[in-house]
Length: 88
Image (cartoon, rainbow, N blue to C red; front, side):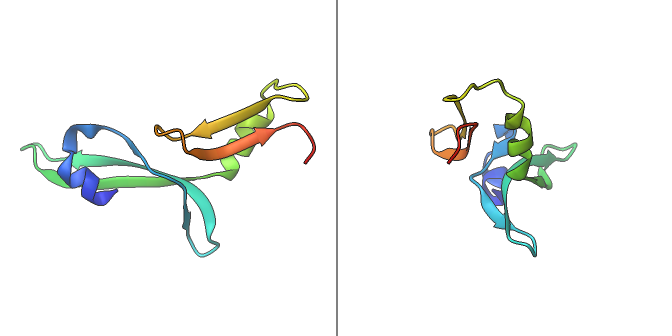
């Protein structure tokens, strides 16, 4: 993501594919944004990794019904997280 921030400063928020992070190796969804100096030069990047567990909490309250499924996907439609209230 860092290279993308340097090369495409005006691209806005970058959301990357899930990755393993931290000592516990839990999956996170990385969000990054370029820091641009007053003179317009690249000054760094800010990144946060949102644990995929967060989406379990958010999706749990969706009224999906017994056969409903909720997906979180990347822009290319690759799956990030799937939630279903059906057993199994």
